[in-house]
Image (cartoon, rainbow, N blue to C red):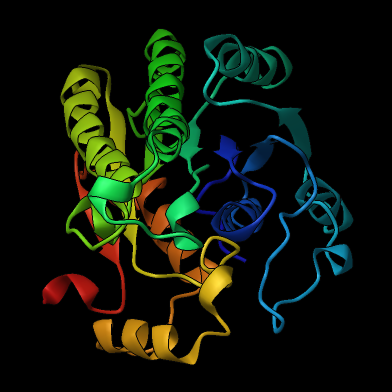
Length: 274
């Protein structure tokens, strides 16, 4: 077993399901201590008839403990500053520092209900930006504040912040005003925070998934017409997996990315090459 994250303390938001869960398991395998953060510890339900039942899955922390990895669950509402501050404080109080934050939690009401901009509900827009953009801002803000105050590790780095953006943070698509706006915002925030944090050797990058087989996309797994269209958008065909995104996040959260900051890394089966 390799240990690219040996002795690292890592927070992962949205850790109960999908990309967050896969990343928590991978980071732990690579030697990190994982602080799982989500609204609730149980996996989110998926609406496809072919999807595995969440009842068959252990909560991420229980799965990590079963595999012998140290872990902690901190319930967090990432739209609330006090809740995010508590997440950082709880981590540092228990483990002494914070090396990695994966700002992964996100929502997409449009996945099940796409609307053109003239019919797009303000409630969708407000809730999506609150979670997908403000939540990433708050995580980055308070993680960077902690990281810049702590001593650097052997590599000279004080921390790694990885944000989940999207190929729709680099492109557009119909019917998704709030989601696309939020993910473009994540990219702008990532690039600005990378400049702000560079003096302290804090890396700030984003991973940009293509359409990925998680609970966020489960609403249309059984729609043959929609799935055929999505497969056609990716030269590799099909959807990506949560594990595909986790491996990219591992690179951005490790010393392998020692000379990388301020980037959005597409992990999209070629979608962004169009």
